[in-house]
Image 1 (cartoon, helix red, strand yellow):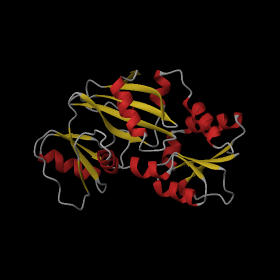
Image 2 (image 1 turned 180 degrees about the horizontal axis):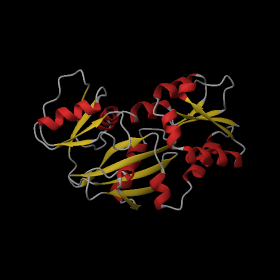
Image 3 (image 1 turned 90 degrees about the vertical axis):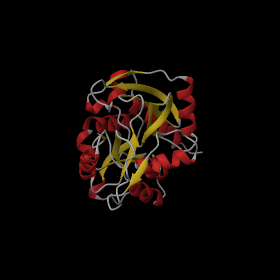
Length: 268
């Protein structure tokens, strides 16, 4: 089989080793995996399937329109790469999230009834421009830093500086990592958060299962925070990073994912 591993240039530059793992593990399974960059356009010869590692629902939809199997599908990409859409979709389906407001930069800024609050770009990643704001001046500065992107505003989680990522393959959890930070309300591994393996509680398993019922996940991460005494969904990572998984578990997630893909691509 032939496959495209689709990245944007910036992401490919940060993930050279990860890309190498895909190509090498693909060879072991008789899959010729080629790196394809969104900015360069697509080759004329189409693959059997595509692994999209770019936050580009338009690309996923285009490839599906060519009749190709896309991992993850465009529904996952369209919902999960925009925090406002994620919260709205989950809320509509009775999945607990921290209350939120969303706005475009052209809108009149929503009034903040009580500080502190957290502001996030809707399409951000890795904690970039996620800011704790305590007053109107910080609010204006945070909006300017995010511009021109749409953003969401939420109250600070009652248990800030602590969250968990649950790695999902084929709509099933395969591992979980607890992230903590003492000096920052954000616990992202890329920002210096500490990580350790985590066993899911009954409530956490139930929440993950309810989220998976709403999607056909191939490979993603469900980020869970703790607010007012219960787990809530913070984000769903379509293009989920694996550095902290490799740091905490003896799991080769690329190998597991390609095993799953190989099984999915078997003729019925």
